[in-house]
Length: 167
Image 1 (cartoon, rainbow, N blue to C red):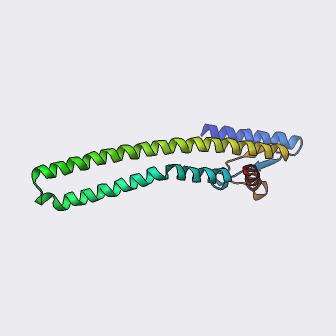
Image 2: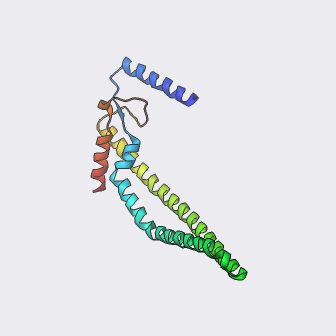
Image 3: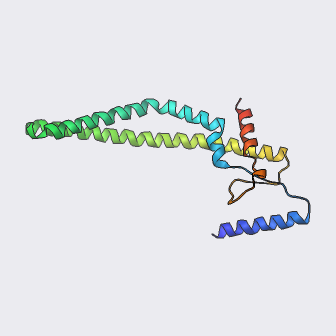
């Protein structure tokens, strides 16, 4: 709360000091839209899907195998010999533990890679925003706002610059 109040006071201070002197040029970028629509983010998403596709398919195969084993156990357990039933339950539990371990490792690896890719994308987006701001002589670029006029929205310009940089 205090941080937001400080930002509001700082912005009012900027507006007052800007109105006392030259006109202040302010722009706004929709950060979420940049992440969703930038060519770099789309390329990274496709790369991650390709890199993790085999592991995902293996996990799906294991899940189906576990489901089949569980259904088989539930259906046939009453008629199975005690020793066979225990062996099937042990086999199911071992496979289930292996599945859960692989699933956890998959999520951790995927999250790590996503974070690495996103850090590079954020860095690139921020460079492009700074370049657009410097080229077009903006005094302030905001990424979050309760309200902004479409006339100060430079998201499209930044997306175009990101697209030009991806080629």
